[in-house]
Length: 210
Image (cartoon, rainbow, N blue to C red):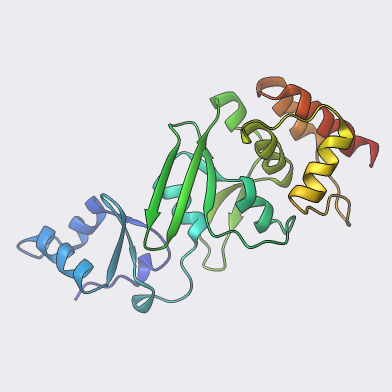
């Protein structure tokens, strides 16, 4: 009997499963049987997670997002919610990648990916450790806001006041409640990213309220 507990919160690829099942005559058939018996959940071709009833704890959807399309980091509304910057719970996990924009509709939820340049991608990424000691990549609060401005199509904000209204009224973000901002991240995004006007006005807004 194969023990899947070591993978209870970490996605498993097909090659790893075949190695684990090497004592079976037909590992491929065993994998199909485990999927049919709901021991495994397929989240895309060649990538699985252990079903919750066969492990302990909750599967991290942020970690799954990192594995579905890599390299990537969780961002946009998903990161803002994670950092408690917006009140709404976000059901679609939104991420940023250097690869093509993609969307995965899986049994564990919807995962969306937006594309940025390699130079912009590498700025402001944090490692987050889960309760199960797994690690996923997520945008810092500053980078998540930059991503919202840069990746929201048709969004044009020409003043610090307009940026403030968008963040506080449209996104219902608490900008200045017991929080300090790393404005250097925004400056770095301005140097290599799009929407320089919006980013410069964001920088002005946050610096004026330091």
